[in-house]
Image 1 (cartoon, rainbow over the protein chains, first blue to last red):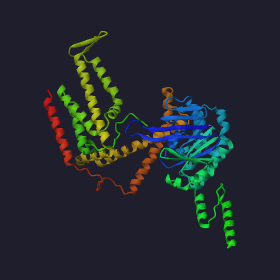
Image 2: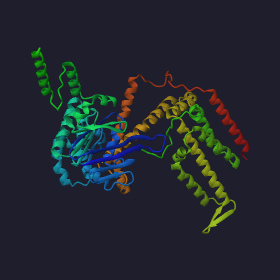
Image 3: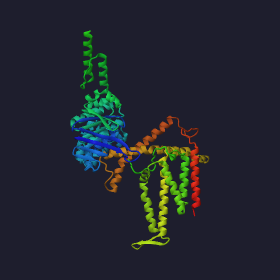
Image 4: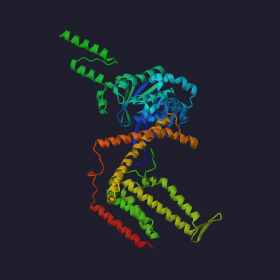
Length: 290
Length: 265
C-alpha cells in the first residue's frame, strides 16, 4: 500500500487550555512493499501518527493518501471499514485487547467483523498459527490462561488473519525478553518478505531499525526531523544525539575502532562475524607493517 | 478523548480562587447551594448571580471555556424551563399560542428554577475547575475529621476517593486505547441497532475490567511494600493551613450572604 502524507498536523483538544500539537506539518512517502521504521522518543508523536494510518484519527489539517483512500480533516472517510480491513495495526501491548472465551474465537473476531467467510478463516488459520508460532492445541484454551508472550502472538494472529496490505507495528517487542524480542522481529521480517506487503515498524530500538528496515524516519516533538536509509541516517551521530537518540551499538563500535586504529570500516549491514574478520585483518596488517 | 465535558476537570492557574483554601472553597460552595434554594426575590437572585459572575471573572479562566463546559446541562436547564411553561398554571394569562395559555406564574417559576439550576452547576463546576481533585479529597478528609469520634472511617473514605480520582484519567486512557484497538479489529461503536451496539461494548468492557483488577492488585501490593497500614499516625505531605487571605475572602462571602438575607422578602 502506497502511503503519502502531505503537511499533516494533528492538534489534540483544539481551542481549549489543554490544546496540544502532536503532529506538525509532517510530509513523507512510503512506497508499497517497503519496510519502514519510525523512530522517536516517547511523546514524539509516533503513536498519534500511526492512528492516522487506519483512520482512527483524522488530521487537523493536511492530506493523507493510503492506497486509494483519502483522509482529510473535512470529509468523512469513505468505506472506513474497508480501510481498516486493509491496514492491520498491532498496537503496543496488543494482548490487552483480548476478550473472547477461547483463543480461536479471539483470532477470528477481527476477520468476522470484516466479513470474511468461515471457509476462508478456517483455511487461513493453520498458516497464520504457524507463522506466529502458536501450537494448534492452544486454540480451545482461554486467552487469559496463556503466558504474556503467547497472548501477544494470539493478538498478532488476529491481525495477520485479515492479510492486510499494510501492517503497522507499534513497538511489538516491548516487554519481551531478549530472545522473545528477536523471535518476534524475525517473525515480522519473515511475514514481510513472504507476502510483499508494506510494513511500518514503530520502535525505540536502533538495532531493530538497522537490521530490518529499508527506510527510517526520525520523529521529534511532532516533527519529522530526518529520513533516509538506515545506513545514511545512522551515520549522523551528532544529529541523532541532538534529538536524544543514540546510534546503534555496531556503528558506535566501528566509530570507536576508527578512532583507535585510524582505519574506517564502512558499514554495509555485515554480520558480527564478518565485521570481526575484517577487523582482525586490519589489525594483523597493522602489526605486520610495524 | 472527550472534548466538551469539563465538569471535574482541573484547569491549572494561579488566580485568587485557585489559591483559596480548598476547605473554605467547599464550605462556600456548599453554603451557596443552600442559599440558592432560599432565594425568593429578584434582588436576592441578583446578589447570588453577581457573586457567581464575580467568581467566574476572578478565576481568570476564559468565560467561553466555562460556558462550553456547561454544554451538557444547557439542555436540562432549557427543558425544565419549558416544562414549567407547560405545567404551571398560576398568575395571569400572559398570552396564548394555539389555544395554549402561558401564565405569568409559569414564566416566573420557570425562570427561577432554570436560574437556580444554572447557578448550582456553575458554582460546582468552578470548584472543580479551580481545585485539583487531590486537594478536594484532602479538604473532605479534614472537614470530616470530627466524624472519627463516632468511628466513621474518614481516612479510608478519603483514600478511596483519591484512588478513584487518580484512576479516572488512567481508565479513560485505557478505554480510549482499547476502543481504538477494537475499532481497528472492525468493531463499529457508532452505527447499528441498539442490540448491535450493546454487543460491541463487550470487547471493550472485558479487557477494561481485566486491566482494572490487575491495576488494583498492583497498587495494593505497592502500597504494602511501602509500609502503608492505614491512617493511624500518618503525617501529611500537603498540610492545609488557613492564610489571612482565605479569612478575608470568607468574611466577604459572609457579607454577601447577609446582604442576600436582608434582600429576601
